[in-house]
Image (tube, rainbow, N blue to C red; front, side, top):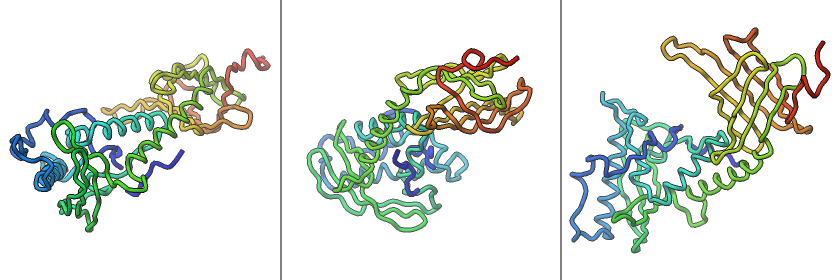
Length: 312
């Protein structure tokens, strides 16, 4: 699968803030700065400049917490649902869902501020508005974030106003929407491969945890429906990701009050030439006779006490 780390952690910092699903209508932050007069020409350069200025002024505002410190992840306002076009936002959400399945990071930088971090003197100005049609427009932005830089955004006119339809649009198609589409395409390929993992998996070998793992396919990808150490203890909140090559099964129960781990399970594996899942496993559990860190191999539809020579 193509790497999903770009040049700059947004929820990565994913999507530059909490994905709450709020829309612009759920806040009065823009009321005083919006132009609602129906006689205004919303396709004029002046209006488009005002619209983008309003959006990016708000980007600057939500980078401060209640104590006046710059902290972009502090705000619960969802810039993406408020200011992206409907099709662009839906594409990003689909890509995020795919990354939940594959364990990849969609964005490792904040595309709103053009960087992983933001300087105290971060600023944004509209440099140019051009190629305006009934439904589309392009805007060049001059952004200062530690240094001066330029970027372009594509706009789409819908729902009575302009919304961002792409960051860094490109005539050769090598833009953000193309990137999201490729993430989705590769993720769907991985999902098809994941269907081969559906079923029961049992441990192979003697000097390793007697792990039994069951995987099922849902509309949201692979799901762990059973993960336990035979006749000892189990894990019931296990998550799984598979990118077409590597499988990762994890559970971490952390006591926030005591600030300590109650139990944890990690199994990172791949299919070997025999079709077995082989990799490294870590188990820490209060009911375990011993913690385990080391290699582990699982075989599909295999149960050692049934299919192998029983221990005496």
